[in-house]
Image (cartoon, rainbow, N blue to C red; front, side):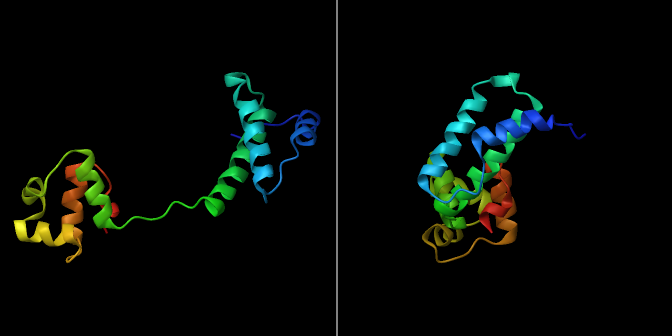
Amino acid sequence: MTTLLNTRVYGSLLEKYQPKAIASESEYQKSLDAINDLMAKGEDLSPEESTLLETLAILVESYEEIEFPIPTSSPRNILLHLMEVRSLKQVDLVKVIGSKGVVSEILSGKRAISKSQAKELGAFFHVSPALFI
């Protein structure tokens, strides 16, 4: 369902905040400040303010993806992290993956996680098996 915007009100907001593609740290901070101003209103946002907030969020997200990329992690590192978080030891994965030797090879990086093992790990950790592929 499309919400009709009051073009005068929306135009006034655009004039006040002047959203545009973010190209510097100061523009990024200005956009974050504008988002915080709008979010401080809570659920009292007008449709125009809500639309502007969404636009600013998209611009900030785009800038953050470029300036602050999240490095991808290997399936092995994800597995090691999940084990650490849950205080699991190598022996705890034997029933999930298979033999001690296979678990050891996977954790040491000598062997990749197979698709069937990824499915089992996904079910065991309650996450998407895609994390392990």
